Amino acid sequence: MREDKQLLVITHLSQLLDLVTGIGGFIVPLVLWLTQKDKVAGMDMHGKMILNFQISLFIYSILCIPLIILLGLGIILLIIIGLVALILPIMNAIKVSNGEMPYYPLTIQFLK
Image: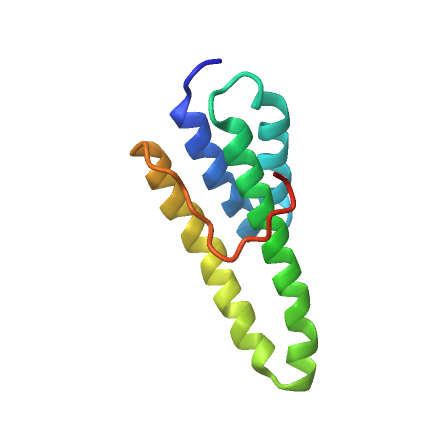
């Protein structure tokens, strides 16, 4: 296995495609993880972490829909989810480039 911090950073930053395409932030990391998990050191762990984060964000967004209808609180939560989806991938890409472990809080562990 080879070390490739740049690919790990790109994988974390590829989540930002959600802001442009709506679903690219899930598909691109998924493809990178599936194709490179056996070739790049750490890609398996980072890929699972990113996919768990993306799935968790999707679930939290779906849960906000009834809150919009019932209380109006869901709009505020969706704004917070959007900010988290923007800020955390950038912060974790910087951590990976510095050799630190990334962390996505409130992520449900679907892939272990």
